Structure formats: structure tokens, C-alpha cells
Amino acid sequence: MADYKRLISGNKRELLNFKGNLLSTAAGKTVKSIMVTSAMNGEGKTTAALSLAYTLAVNAKDNVYLADGSWNSPKMDKIFNMGEVQGISDYFRGEVGLDTIVRQTLTENLSVIPFGKKTTNSMEILKPTMLKEKIDELRSKCDYVIFDSASIMGSADIAVLSTFFDGVIMVVECEKTKWQVVDLAKSKLESAGANIIGAVLNKRKFYIPRWLYG
Ligand SMILES: Nc1ncnc2c1ncn2[C@@H]1O[C@H](COP(=O)(O)OP(=O)(O)O)[C@@H](O)[C@H]1O
Ligand SMILES: [Mg+2]
Image 1: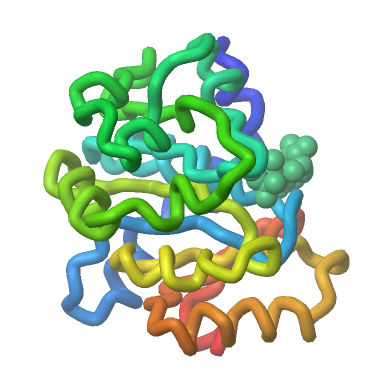
Image 2 (image 1 turned 90 degrees about the vertical axis):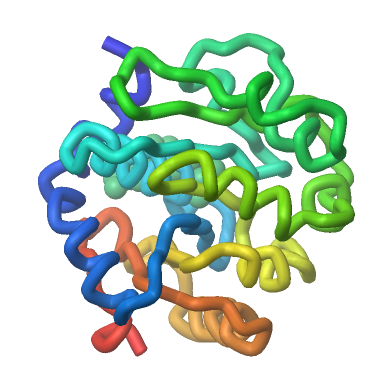
């Protein structure tokens, strides 16, 4: 069994309703590209992104691209045993096309885009020219792009990046991250103009829609 199935095994049932929630909160707007973020590191972004992507691919039979955008600790290459391969950072820099970086996994309908060449300079992923167009190109090739991002408080520019996606999901680690910090992170996204479509209350496994969260 692939590692990632172990990572998400506790999460599947809760995620079954996720697509319905996505659609119902989107109010007629097509939500195809989704950024997964959180206020702080370690709250469970990668796990939630993986679970959401897997559920959409397997249960909803949608063609899903799971992209690793967590420049400070990219993990998808290890999780999916890919070795050192090119990925989204190389694509954003304009060095490779989508054909090179989108990798079909053993799970039908689920493709992974690893981070690619490592960098400690977040600007390489946040500031390329035509970034929105590149994200939109990804979006046009599949049913859903799930973008596993870095955390909001770690970067001044993550809020701007979030506006290039149709929707943003915030992961909140229950009983760990202070609500003031979550509020501050959420208002950073909102003042940039992000469309927050929901929150994952992690390690309690509740999914709450926007009307309840806000
Ligand atoms: N729902 C959960 N229940 C238990 N452990 C979890 C859950 N979600 C994440 N974890 C664990 O918490 C740690 C951080 O999760 P991760 O998804 O890597 O966070 P992030 O991507 O936000 O840094 C990992 O060890 C992961 O296995
Ligand atoms: Mg992560």
C-alpha cells in the first residue's frame, strides 16, 4: 500500500461529503482550483490536501491534479516515491511544460505535481511573471487542482497567491493554534480578496461550511 493511503486512512469518511459542500458553498461559481493553507506550519495542510485530492479522484471520479506548493517543506516527492524530479517550481520558472511535471499515480484519476527543484527563496514560487496564467493553465487541464501551500503567517505574499485560485481552504489544528492567530491569518486572506470556501478543523475531523465559520 502506498504511504499516502496510510496518511489519509482516518480521514476518508469525513471527506466523502466534501464535494457536495464545495459545490453548495460556491454559490454558482465554478470552484476548480483550490489552495489549501493554514495559519502556521504543521497544522495538517499536506494531509488535508492529499485526503481531498484522493477523495475527489476515487469517490467522485474527478480528474485531479495535486500540486505541491509548500516551498519551505515540499513532501509530495517523498510521499509518492518520485525521487528528484522536476515539478511546479520549474514550471512556474518557465523551464518546463505541464507534460513534464504532471505524474499519474497508481490511483486512477489522481496525478501529482511534485515541487521540483528545491529553493529557499519563496519568491521563485510567488513572483514569477504570468503566475495567474500558469495556474489557470493547470486548471484548464483537469477537473480539480488541489494546491498544497505554505502557511500564511510564514510569508507576506501567500495572501496574494491565494487570489489566483478559485477557492481557499484553511486548515486549523484544533486546540493548538490560537484563535487570534487564525483570525489574523483569515483576515490577511480576506483583505487580499481570497475566496475562502471552507475550513478543516483538523485533528477533530469536522468540516464546516463558510456560513458557520464566518
Ligand atoms: N487529522 C490528523 N490526525 C492525526 N495526525 C495528523 C492529522 N493531520 C495531520 N496529522 C499529522 O500532523 C503532522 C503535520 O501534518 P502535515 O499535513 O504535514 O502539516 P503541514 O503540511 O500543515 O505542515 C504530520 O505528522 C501528520 O501526519
Ligand atoms: Mg505540508
